[in-house]
Length: 231
Length: 231
DNA sequence: ACGAGTATTATGGCACACCGTAATATGAGT
DNA sequence: ACTCATATTACGGTGTGCCATAATACTCGT
Image (tube, rainbow over all chains, first blue to last red; front, side, top):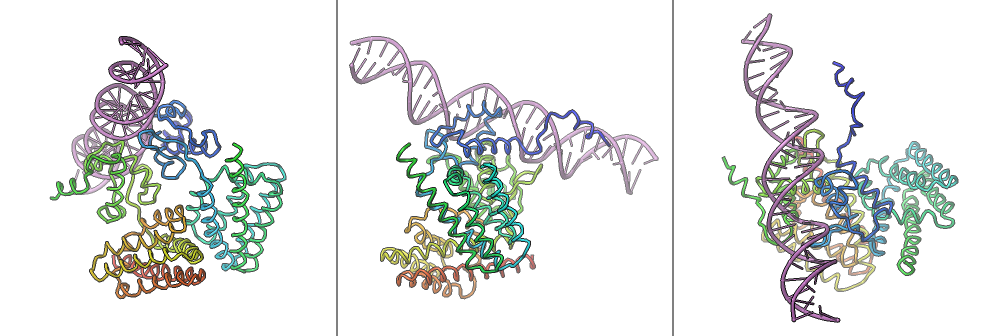
């Protein structure tokens, strides 16, 4: 019967996802985008008011973000936005290097032109976003590039790990891509990855991926050091 | 029949850390140890009764375990114990290989006798536990071995990732170490890692670590395949 | 001005109540 | 007796008020 069809017409913007998931994304974005600053306290009942949801939801969201490493909980104080220290950031870049190198090698050994085509497409997208000064677009396309690298060889778990770690250094990523010359240097390094994969040279692909991450890490380290000194 | 037994078996004791942390560990252990079987539904109100805590806690714990990958949530059905499929397990072993190889390489390059001594100590512990048929001990000592590998070169984040992934394949680990000859083969492979580190040969250490994980993965794959076939 | 006692604030935790949905049981009509 | 429709139940999703406790702010008496 069309009963539910009729109901959907007047339905009150009933989100497909649960409130919890929506709230989770809101808060995560708020932290990642810097709306909530590192070290800032996240008061449950304040969040309830801001999000327009109940404490139940807020608490579950905070717990979730805690397990993602975006939120830390001080004993007898409550949750705060996690601080990112230089050492942790370096380790995250290092892990990304290990996993992205592995994925690049696997892509190369697969010798599938479709993979190369997909990577090329993302790479073009990155260059276009850079040209248009669309920095969020650059991040998205970069994520798409690496997502292809992992999922085209079926490495969904590794992609999940990389994603989990990446949100923690997101603001570093935003700063890194705005660095002078990064708009040509970054895509050039990714081009090397794609080329190695095109040639089926796993070793070179792995090395190129490592180089790219290492460079990003170096830039991030400089930024973070300067930020801690000057800020 | 054993309703009482089931209810009291994993009940939390109040003191010490927050109830939430205690409950989290209880439920995680219950899943890891197979007290809750894969695919089994985790009914919130039942868990409240079994753990002796409120729904608030139970829900936060379930959320946490969900983000750890130990629990999955079916839409409009609720949480169940996550099933582990062969493909996922293989990927987890692969990631462990990448990270443990990296850590082993770093240990070798550090050329610190204290690291070798600590690894040797864990290795001896493993052999002793094998000799005493103390299988939980074997797992603990093996964890200690790898913890040393990571944390002695300061790679706490990577160790966290490995830990996170390892709980998901814990029952495979338990089965793997009970395999015929694993009591001599496993320690022998770990000995190779230690030897390479002692010699300061990063490349060999990395390879040895990869070999060890690869062997464990192969055993696990056989077991899992047999298990799925046999039922 | 200082210190003790008190009020406020915030988290941790609990109990309950309500809704929607899915599964199951029940019952009425053929 | 079988089937279909309806009632009931089970359970997650969500909201809310309340209590205990710890930390912090405040106030008052000296």
